[in-house]
Length: 288
Image 1 (tube, one colour):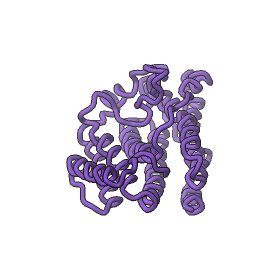
Image 2 (cartoon, one colour):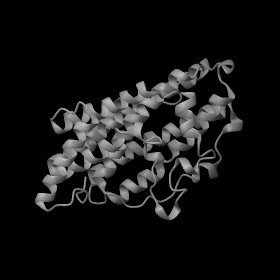
Image 3 (cartoon, rainbow, N blue to C red):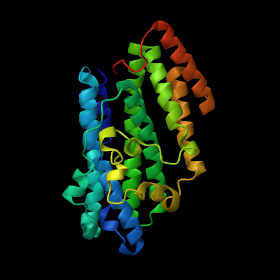
Image 4 (spheres, helix red, strand yellow):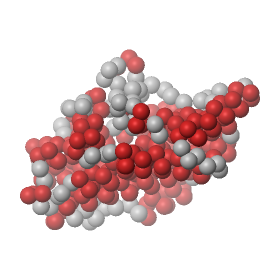
């Protein structure tokens, strides 16, 4: 089991909201209304760890190890929402999300292949790590700069934990796992070709609720994410390249094969799909 070791590792670096956030250094002159509004949107977005956890537990009922790890991931992700809400409560109480605004992002995700979902969230952690690093640079108020930097480090550790489960999946499922991971890796490393940000909170997950079946579509401002990325934190091609490089680097380590570009990963995906087809197995049916 991976859960006991991951619990110990993550417990050893867990930060305390009262002791480790420098609340006393707050500088009101360095927080604009525009910046404060983005904090509210991120607080609501982070609340979506709740429906994501419900999805993970439902779709991984046969995997108690991974399901137990969700207790860590869920706790730390909800803590991200909580610390952003606490920031607003202390310094911009007029912007604290209402319970209804938080509840809006809790809805049912359709069942999905466990392997592909695992890879999707691994890439999501990499992307969010970079988004929050950039947000920390964009903000001028010292407390929120510290908070975003702290959250970015958590997201990196979560990505590392997901990678451990991906390695285990390859040991257990072989080419089925490789094909599923490569498929999602190509998608998530191709964000420059899409009109929207590629992150789990911006993907459609329940056709019966379309078009309000993404987390972002259920925010008070559904267009907030693209504006935050493009006009505020300026997540440009240089930063997007950092995300792609990390995805390709980790895929190279995971598959023990070099992927200098998305095209190389896509060729590998085709190889794995062919290999799975020859074996007669479904590349998305295996459990994590």
